[in-house]
Image 1 (cartoon, rainbow, N blue to C red):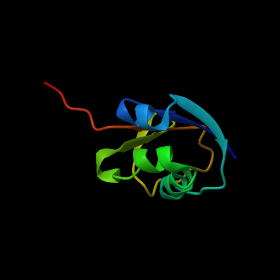
Image 2 (cartoon, rainbow, N blue to C red):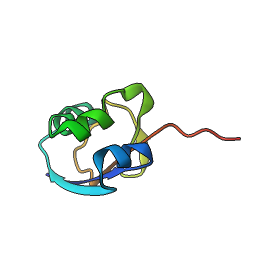
Image 3 (cartoon, one colour):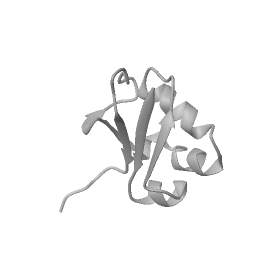
Image 4 (cartoon, one colour):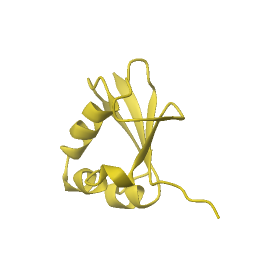
Length: 83
């Protein structure tokens, strides 16, 4: 399935681009993370510490076991803090 992957903040810097369109057979976010991390060293570096990464599927916060069926967009970003 086609999927847009968005990268924000330091994740974007590690991957080297803010957005990419991929073709994936991943059924969950966890499977997508594994697929992306296997693409190259930059994706692997961005996803090395999942405790420091949040994810949204079609603009809704999700966890690693969230299904991707029917999703159009997955975004990865660092946790936000208020102040």
